[in-house]
Image 1 (tube, one colour):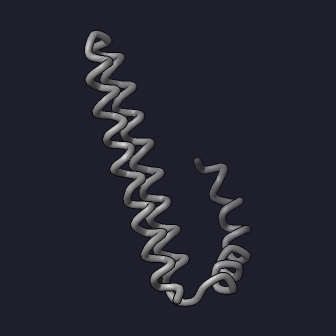
Image 2 (image 1 turned 30 degrees about the vertical axis):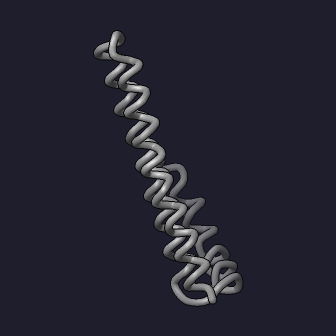
Image 3 (image 1 turned 120 degrees about the vertical axis):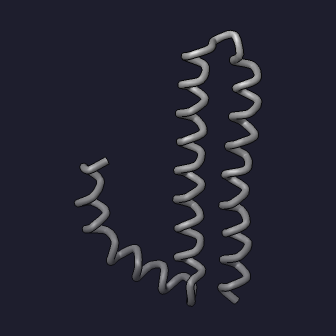
Length: 90
């Protein structure tokens, strides 16, 4: 993860300019934060599901179901942010 930091620092000004040109207000920031939050949430759910299956392989069916539901709820946040970004972009 630390290898990404210099790359992000170099590309951040260009991303901010592109976001400012694409829409006004806080829509790009809201969408970016929600997308990052959803990605982190999906990653955490996947990590927890893999750990749980490693500890108790016989419960993999129930863990898979709960993991898929958790990932769907995390992705729903990104969809809500997309709708809010379109509403703020008007």
